[in-house]
Image (cartoon, rainbow, N blue to C red):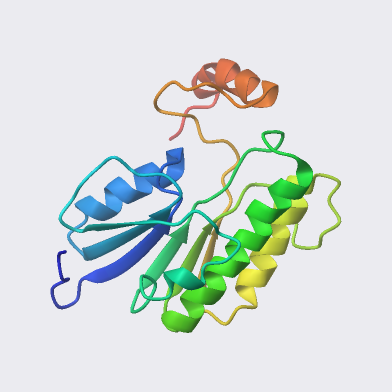
Length: 191
């Protein structure tokens, strides 16, 4: 295991097998200010790197076994999630809210000065009044993180992230967005 040099950051990432988490992990590993990355996930990453410690953890309903791995971390990026419609509504809430809160609590107890970054989503509703369960659950998780006592919490709310590599889209809405996205890029170029 690589021990960070003076000034280098110790980071933890959850959900690095997903699209966003995978890119974030590669960026962390390549960045010179990062000395050590702990990846916590349910499935193996299939990569090896001198800065990387991979921790397999199957039950995010109970993260107490992660206490040692989450000690002395500077920041965490939480990208664990699932798509609306991919799982029943109760499971969507468990993954989006309960797993996030459980992980954050263990991190806060073991790295009290850590920064928490959360991959939320556009439309997240912290008021809890949205008719869309995804929006309510993301808003509930955001509220819990903001109240958890972290010195800094960053909430990332992307609307749609175009997959760089082709993949099987999880539902009709994503298939439709993937099909029309190139036209949007032509009509509304990024300047």
